[in-house]
Every structure is written in structure tokens, then in C-alpha cells.
Length: 78
Image 1 (cartoon, rainbow, N blue to C red):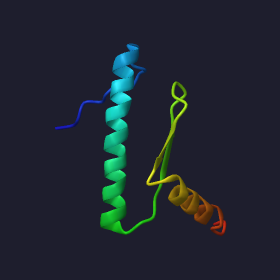
Image 2: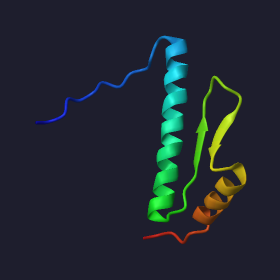
Image 3: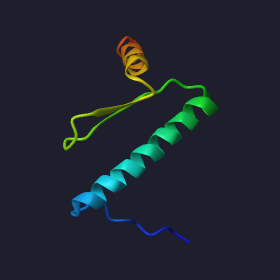
Image 4: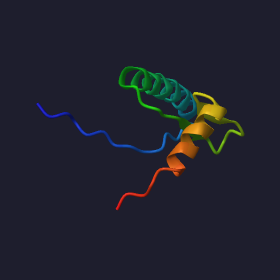
């Protein structure tokens, strides 16, 4: 049986939107941690919310900088 498609749209109620973002962010960081541990890959995440001045960085700003620099220095594929 096929899964029903979900319609993605902006949550209009501000407190609900912020609560949903908080939950989904925590879940995303947890899954990213599992992937890096189980698969032995290097990863980072940067989430910028326009309504908040704080930027969320996983695992830490220093490690994210290291991952991004390593990515920038990869040779281009043709």
C-alpha cells in the first residue's frame, strides 16, 4: 500500500511553528549523530532561523568549520 503524500506548507500559528522547529531540530541533530557514528562519515549542520539571532551548529562551531574547510578543499569533479 502506497504512503499518502503530505502537503508541506508554512505553519501559520507562530508558537506551534517554533515548537515544531525545536522538536525537528533536536531530531535532526540526533539522526546526524547516529549517521556519523554508525557509518564513520564526517558531517556538520548549520541551522539559521531568521526569527532568532542564534545560529545552531552541530557538533560545534570549530568542528563545523573544519568539515566545511575540508569540503572546500576537495578537488572538483568533472
